[in-house]
Length: 405
Image (cartoon, rainbow, N blue to C red):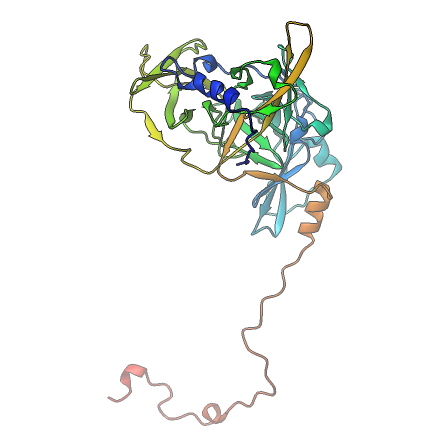
């Protein structure tokens, strides 16, 4: 989690922002439906910039931007290399058929003769943000510009198909991923950019402000697939979203349903004299989830805690806003907020980029394990006592059970 310095002299504006969340009326109603990212669905064969490069963990390497596309669908064909046998052998488990014909893989009896061919399509869940050094702001419809403060970040839903084959009763599967810096996460929640909750004022010219709690708001669970695999991933039938207020975190359980998705439907729960309003239904991976039964709108049995139940990492987003005064002059200020909250440890980390996938595989597979140590310690000339062999005792063939009888 990032630490943020509070700006002196802005407690009034921050307090006004907090007051919007502390009223007894419906809370989070302004976030009932997550806004669509400014970037639309990526074109076929296009990989988000933040997903480029070779990603790794203890059991695999993943390369999204292979520059190979499927002739059948025009979608991205990734390369996945499995680090097998305690990382002593790298198996090219999934790759483009064109790449396989150009670079013939090893033939052995431990891996398939023909690698799997996967096809990917990327749908943005949040805006892809870079720091100001990249000079790549994301412009909003109201004129705001978004940047990443310290580390680039973004989130996508990856739709995976297996060369058009129907596997496990489905033709495609979804793996939501989030990137913060050089780490990729599978378990995360997203929140609508909420800088408009801070009042506009020309008195804020040139300053950066934020609310007391960057986590305040409704965090929608984006999904929890178990990995980017060459076989269909496993996803949970339940999602866990969070409502973060000033003094509490409310856990909202959603479960899969066959009801028709209604983006406008809302549900509510109460805590004392406060009422909280959240989306009744959410979509993740092409599936619909609900937090109430049937047509009900009351959420029951809400769990409450003081903080998130797990270790988390949030991104830091800077929103540059412009205000026009009555005299026609324009001033600007910046609001610090967050849109991605990743839970637990990263699933993948970006490599340093000094080696290609071919070099990684060749270097690893060229290694040879040292021969095992001899079962006998080093010794000189062996001097055996051959007398028992040359002149064995008379009872040499007696059974041990018969000795002494």
